[in-house]
Amino acid sequence: MSNPVDPVAYREKYGPWAVITGASDGTGAAYARQLAAMGLNLVLVARRLEPLQALAQELEKDHGITTRTASIDLYQPGAGEQVASAAMGLDVGLYISNAGADANSARFLDAPLDAWRGLISRNVFTVTELAYHFAATMRQRGRGGILLMSSGTALGGQPGVAVYCATKAFDLNLAEALWAELGPFGIDVLGAVCPAMDTPSLQSLLGANGLTVPGLFDPEDVVRTLLARLPDGPTHVFPFGPDAPRAAEIEKSRRERVAVMVEASKMFFRDP
Ligand SMILES: NC(=O)c1ccc[n+]([C@@H]2O[C@H](COP(=O)([O-])OP(=O)(O)OC[C@H]3O[C@@H](n4cnc5c(N)ncnc54)[C@H](OP(=O)(O)O)[C@@H]3O)[C@@H](O)[C@H]2O)c1
Image (cartoon, rainbow, N blue to C red):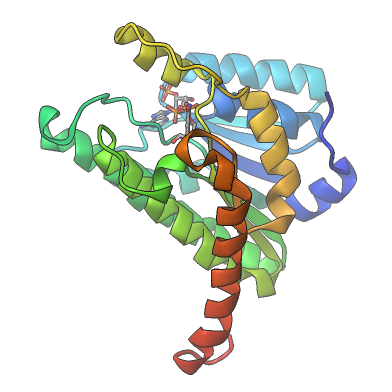
């Protein structure tokens, strides 16, 4: 199925280059494939170079785009600068923060503190650094997009994923605030409250514990929905889990709250 978006308009607003973190499988690879099909050039980031390069070759051959691949560990301090270097000299119109899952499968005290430090480093520090870096150049050119992959776990504290859900709440609030701040400069920002999806990361976590989860979403469908939704932020909430019946209501109330705060913040900040 093709994307319900106009590829020419998409390239003009969000091209010619997009940066995708965690691009080698799951939703990251789905973003890469769907954006390549629309003719965007891609900077593909993950730790393992081999699958990234295989994907890059496939997309260059199938869609005639140009790619750069970079092996970077986003857990590490300084990862944001490394990604920025990998994209040096390119006109980046779209930043997709995709890598973000919690590979620990552990309750708070059952993993070493360093595991949580790494999760915070990747999902909070690296995401902030890259949003800051790419938003600055998008503001100069007056157009662009930022899509941050959050999670249903961001909507409330959840046992078993304490630090993960806290980082995802950070990403969601960051996206909503940036939507309001950067919108006037022509930058679209979307926070994605994602459902459980059939990705290699989730499957390997479930497989290691002999578990199955019914009703997993197809990553290709999720990505298609989010790419279409990017111009209309700040939040997209997929119906899944305990919040499923209220997904549309939650999305609407979060959007309305941001709109109220745009006005309320004028008490504290001058217009940009
Ligand atoms: N799957 C779900 O059910 C689900 C549910 C809600 C939200 N989400 C969100 O959706 C996004 C994608 O999730 P996903 O399930 O596809 O798994 P993921 O582990 O977040 O993404 C996998 C991709 O990220 C790369 N990656 C992981 N850690 C990295 C690191 N430290 N540095 C560089 N690259 C890294 C992996 O390649 P390498 O291993 O080679 O680095 C791979 O390309 C995440 O933000 C996640 O929080 C997922």
